[in-house]
Figure 1 (cartoon, rainbow, N blue to C red):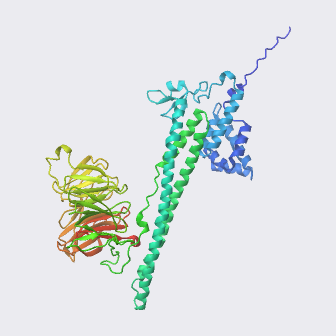
Figure 2: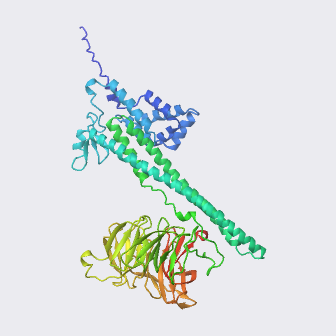
Figure 3: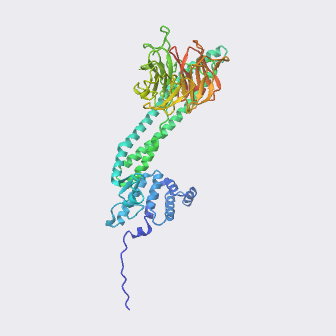
Length: 609
């Protein structure tokens, strides 16, 4: 019997790929190994290799970086299950290893190989990873993944996911990257560059002040030695300690800002390259969401605040009521806030300029930019002075101001006066908000007497009302009333830290309260064993609580320091005229005390930290 001829059928060109899945050939792996160099170890770790396995590849192929990488990739390929999309897995590992450039090149190389192997009828576009026979036509914005029409019905139901056509999504995100993200990143980079310049400037000013003060102290020390005493030696030692501390602080600031600047510059360069590349929509979207997450994470890392006080020194003096504390300078930090008599009133002036007379300094605040805000009670205004004691501007207010406070981060100034309204001003004296402490419908029917104001670290404003014996809390932007907290002490003076409020009336004690107004402990100041007549200021600082007090007679003012549990630590100063307000910087390095005679005393603790 004659044998029947066997019919030979030609195998389709892509049948091999269908049988073995979308794998990677030796040529592709060899090319990738040649491009990676030492970075192959990072990629290998993201592909699942352990450190021990990576060392084995290096030991088996000493001094042959390309061969080490190639053998690792071959081993990885052998581990992959049938049908696994190896190219996608390797591209993901490359992106994790920060080699986005090679991930894009690998995608393009694979796409060109697919075009060579695919029938013309199949060249419709990239295929869905979940449904390999379907072409990717959509993008799930909820899951940030490219999908096919089957995915929109099965895995990415439109009722629970935001679905867009892949072309429209790519066009939108290309626009967002070019017009929004890149300019925003550029502004952040400029902010960091300005921050570096500010650090450098503060360092130069500090060194200048340091050299001047050290010269004065050395002359004083030499005079003391000639007289056979050692007065002032401890000041010289403190100066050396301060210099070492400041050098370390400036170095830390510069390192943090420089590191953040470098990373944001790298992100900007990568984003710029992505925005220029003519990629397929699917590949662009995958890379876009990776760079977006990276940029958003870096944007959340704000540059550290540069404390202007780092550039300044207090005037070192040898006499003090308590030797642990520095003597004050009346804003004598490289400049001067000088006192001038005028029919019993005192004033602030810039050397050689017209005197600005203050009449009753009732409250004080230190802004984040280190300017000083003083409530000029009888003149119905708030006076803003710079760090050298020179008046910069005046903020008129409708009533007689009782107290001022400053937002810890935004330089906003909050003022309470003899009216029924609280006012918030910007650093540039613009009125940002004006609000009552009761619902607006009840303003005409409710009698209030606002005497104190403080600001929580998150910006929430606290206002003390002695008529109703409450403090009220308000939204920092529009002043919306958040809650009203009753207290047993009329809140003439008030200060806060993270979770405590210290309140004092015109009596002999101050109460430390929790956030609900419940008493935690009481402070009862004494002088020479006897209770003081009245407390006239309270302030929370990083080192504890400071209070001002007097015996209702001029020149009997004291400043006392207590720890966080209310234990007495020491007397900061005494013999003040009539202190009526106290505030400290957010960093706790400086303390400002307003005196009724119109002066402001500054205490600097840099050398005593």
